[in-house]
Amino acid sequence: MKTDPKLYLAVDNSFAKKRWTRPAEWMELLREFGVSVAEASADNELDPLYMDVSYMADWLAEAKREGERTGVRIGNIYSGHGTYATLGLAHTDKRNRDRFLNDWLKPISAFAAQAGAGLGFYCHAFSDATLQSPEAYDDAERDLYARLAELAIHCRDLGISAAGVEQMYTPHQIPWTIEGSKRLLREVYRQSGAPFYLTLDTGHQSGQRKFTRPSRDRIRQEAARKAQAASVQGIWLGPKSAELLFQEMLAKPESQWAAYLEAIDGEMDRYPHLFASFPDGDTYLWLEELGRYSPIVHLQQTDGTSSAHLPFTEEENRKGIVFGEPLLQALAVSYEREEAQGMPPPCKELYLTLEIFAGTSEMNANILYKMRESVRYWRQFIPHDGILLSEALRHLSGAGLTDASRG
Image (tube, rainbow, N blue to C red; front, top):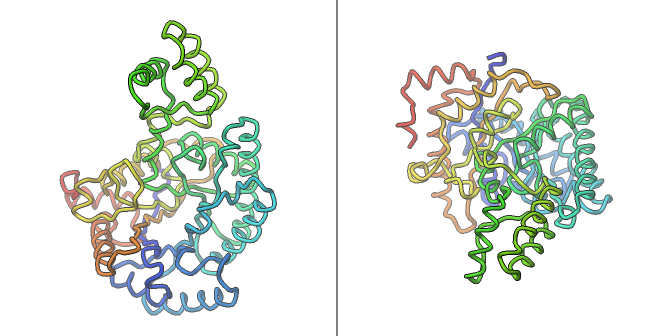
């Protein structure tokens, strides 16, 4: 492979939020887990929207001091649920878009630079009104790309080599398709000339197949079911205009459906941003296509139907689809491919980062068990930090870590 990236096993400290909140506490836990790289989440008392400026400075001083004591360093800073829960950087009001860029993303970028860390985030969404207007959607998409390009330049000037946005899995949160992710990376890089990347999440392929475009035959079949039942399950028609046509069609005799099916098709043509393709639901295909542009890969176990941020325990692995061997092999495929025109340079370092969530009522002992077991599982594939991908693959083969040892 032309670029042989270094791999690091990291842990997002959101598992510790509201429990182990000081750097001294969660860094000590990571040391006990056998982890030397942290992803510091804004959710764990690090959000500049809520936290005092002098407190943030003290936090950084403590993190550096405790990092020297524990041997744990902050590899990346990441946004949390506080900003994820809003329209944020794609808000319908420009004042709020400006505030998210200038008063949240730029300050957290400066903080990441002071910490010697990378930056990852997700803090935007498109309202339904935006999605229902192709013209408004195009404007919002262009505005978002311009803001990301401005941020990419800002991060480059701060010395952050790998800033990036997380991929998602529904139409209102872009990028959510493979081609859409490539378009975002190309456009931001074209506008900024500064590297800007993705965070891939191994559970963020759980929604796309709910939003694949149905064929006329499929729509006809669902209409026939609707005529005989109280509701229709499992069909996505995209825009409201197509849904209204579908409801009108149901009130007509089947001999008149052909004209409605053609009209529905025409409406769906106008809203390509509302549809994914079936391959967009494939975790490993995302890694093959975009792994080399993903300095952070969030690791969670999933059965493929939801993004629940489950651990890599023996119990969850038996039901899961995310495993070390195919993940490393998918990354290798990505790095072996020819350079794609207009894309940023391939990443030289990848942080495979456990992002395991804890329930509000979950007992501390159970949380720590999940984290230890997840680290233990992944240390089979990343035996030491800084290992080259090629070396990790040779280790995988030599150690006999094949599909049969997934659990």
